[in-house]
Image (cartoon, rainbow, N blue to C red):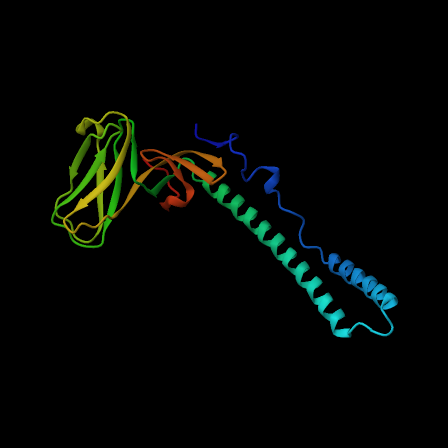
Length: 223
């Protein structure tokens, strides 16, 4: 059964107390600041040198400086709250993808015997297009895709037919024009792990993939 896991080894996640949204900006603090300023103003006037009275513009400058500092503090608090909210929404969205098929940007495959499908996107037509898989020992397997027009080029990796053992394989594409097109892999999301860097999805065929590498997802479950 697919689950959503928390990475307890990470020192900071969206569920830790350090990420708890701080108290919203309190408008009453502005009143407190004004009262404090008036108290300081009275004290300055009371104890100033009668022969050298303080310029009234200095009081205004002091108040402006205090107001500016307080405004910056309030903006910082709002920004922190917004970041925590966005992180929580991202985690909830990622959790909702468990059991769904997604398409992710990938530079490697995690093969376990099942076929893996995906696509590459060419900016230019290519007379020779080859998908290259390289295992941990540096052994390379070429999948010839033939001549291709510019645009999306689908591919399927069949480990059994290619004689590929289970494991991780790096991906690369060789084209006649020498371009390095992006590679996208489709697969089911088995689970979601919450980490300090955000949600990490375990995608069938692609392995562990950060949430931001998702390029497409659908509501229907893959066959």
